[in-house]
Amino acid sequence: MTLVKDQLNVVGIQADLVWEDPKANRNYFEKEIREHSKETDLIVLPEMFTTGFSMNASTLAEDKEGETLIWLQQMAADCDVALIGSIIYTENQHFFNRLFFVEPNGQTHTYDKRHTFTLAGEHEVYQSGSELLQVSYKGWQICPLICYDLRFPVWSRNTTDYDLLIYIASWPVKRVNAWDTLLQARAIENMSFVVGVNRIGKDANNYEYSGHSAIIDYLGESMSNLAPNQVGIVKARLEKKDLLNVREKLGFLNDRDQFTIE
Image 1 (cartoon, helix red, strand yellow):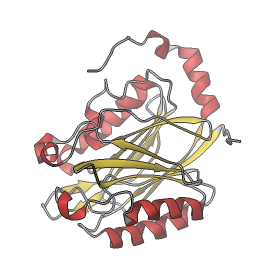
Image 2 (cartoon, rainbow, N blue to C red):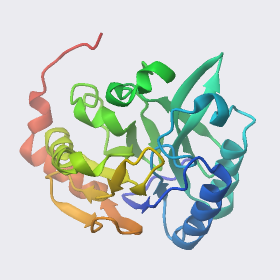
Image 3 (cartoon, rainbow, N blue to C red):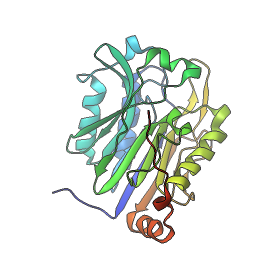
């Protein structure tokens, strides 16, 4: 029987990633996951959390037998918590920026980043995804997306009544105002909780990241956030009853436009 919860306890881990060093990053996140998993349902890690936002896919890509997927499944089981993060992945001779949603029971869901970041040449290395992912976890409908997807509201439009929208990112400091603004906009327009987890630090390409990870409620109000360049977590208890009551009272989602994506 699937456990249904009115409350969902969520943690996002904001970290300074070690460039192209999966083992070092896994070791770091293992410590953090174990520390913050108590009384937590879901822990969110940044985009490409084992390597940083690297285009060196031919060297760093993992497959279904890779250490990171096995590690995610083991950590989820050991700590009785669902985990979300993306890695460089290879399948059928293609590379993907692939997000994994791993449940404690080992069930694993995947999402390939739809909007590859052309400004950095991501589209020249990684295959773009074509399917949204919506996971039913403990009675919550969750839609996880990746970084640049945040700029495209049609892709994330709440046509399926999800409760929680998640963005994992390597979002640079020079455009962090857009990150802050768009996270809030996605929450308001979709009447959904939003979790955004970004990294900090500087990578080998000299790109700087300042974090600004946040948890935002369905009206656009901040529930948890981190100061710029701060290692740490965002954490909140999400209340589904409150979400559904406000949706019913205001009725904004009832007036959604109908559309198709090509």
